[in-house]
Length: 297
Image 1: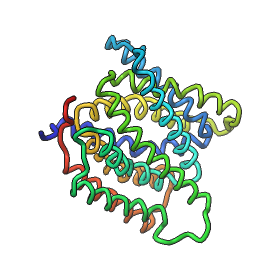
Image 2: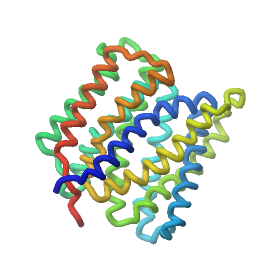
Image 3: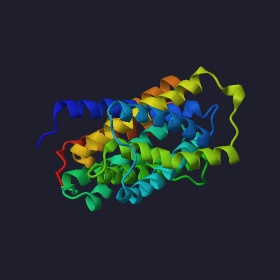
Image 4: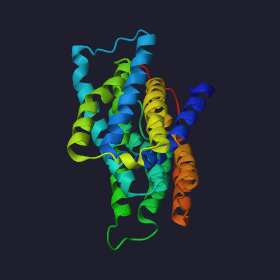
């Protein structure tokens, strides 16, 4: 069954906004280090999702059998966010945007083994391989590095977080097939918030002299637009349609991310970054054309 236009438009809008997330993280990190950024961002998001649940009379307390899956999701979520924020702090916003946008590569691989009826086809494999080549180009800068710089380490951390993001997307798809999506989104953040807060208090200091409207607005964007609205819409989309295909609309994310990085962060658009962005986008387009509705359980 073809994916309806409103679902395609929703996916494109969310992933366009998602492309700005690494840029927002980078701007927020000017004042709030990685764990503090995660804690404040998801505290805002939890409030947004809780209000949504209240207005729609959605029960938020999980049933006994739902806890194991939610704890696994929270572990993936916590690890992925820490690695992403730390990596973005060491690399450019543009590189991080391309890397993060490649999560459909890994979501497709995980879906093949974890989601019934969402199998890799020749077309999907072609799209994944093309996009992976683009990621490799950005990661290496078109060369084999003789030694690792801070940027190289940052790129590796962001790539590792992207693998976990792909896994988390598919695990979320499994959970929302039997658990209300709002509850899944809310508890992945609630169960992680204490880890972020404890680590922030023990190991990080906020740069109060750098606190201003830009880093505060960046955290608000991450919390309200990305972690609140974005997570909810994405959970709904992957519940009703093929997870591999819906996350593949992320082909738009590196384009918006690189553009916003150039405008807001002053990142230089190098040849390898431009080529990698185009190749990742091409791979995601091929993957998106393999779409369909998710089989009902």
